[in-house]
Length: 373
Image (cartoon, rainbow, N blue to C red):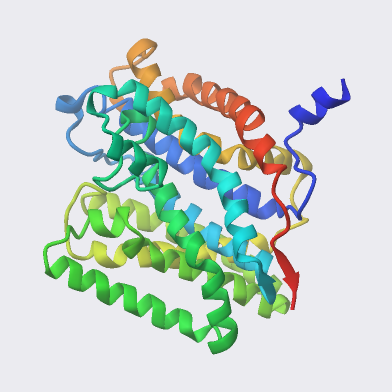
């Protein structure tokens, strides 16, 4: 019986847990979840009636429509967390990579196989290998439909994993200022790429070339927090203004055409999102150990299973939309949110099952990959 309870436990037995960062992970997953519910259960089902992108005078729906920004929050948080765990420590490169493989690859590969069997008519041996070797988001990987549509983020993040230990070595050698040079370099590379024909929307959004700024800003935020712990009270005061700036930025983004619009200023948009989300993480982590018990328990639960939520919610929403969707009102967006009351519990239950059955057993195989310098 004890083994059964250990299996059902969400807590892992090693490593320090940061409650605030679990909460941020939960917020990122919920942003993406609500965005995809809103889009898939409105314009996804009624494209002629709603249009090619969600445009509305309702500021809540405007904000949720751009919840894809949760991807940016995930990426900034990832860099922030790794920097926090490894700052001023020596990283064992292969143990670090092994740890990341055990973290992401089991569920990732499961979805690759689901996509392979679902869209078998388009499968080739080379595209299957491309998918297995984390080339999602490129023509080299098999398109598994709803099962693999979001896996490009995992491929992009793994490129960051490969270079992160080297980045920390260079930061120790040249100080944090080298991060500013990296950010400037990637902005210039995006400008050159777009000028030579790359999409100013797709290239910044789907590739490491467009996302590297966000990883760099996450590292920079973590270094700041570790270097100036005495700024804790000032960081707390930042939280509300930063949240308002994030909400305002996403509403403005929607009114400027949203994700769908192709325009040159999107070359810089991920950098702006990275700055806002890095500031949010800095401000939010300042409340560590000050959360109400129930609030902490709920968000920590969602944060623990957030990886499964992120990878599984799109196929779940897609299946639900074809089998169980019901029209409760004449407003397409209201309908989506009413159906969300059914979809969200389903996503949470299946994600919990995925965490217990797939994620947690592999997570417990990880070993420490740092040592003090």
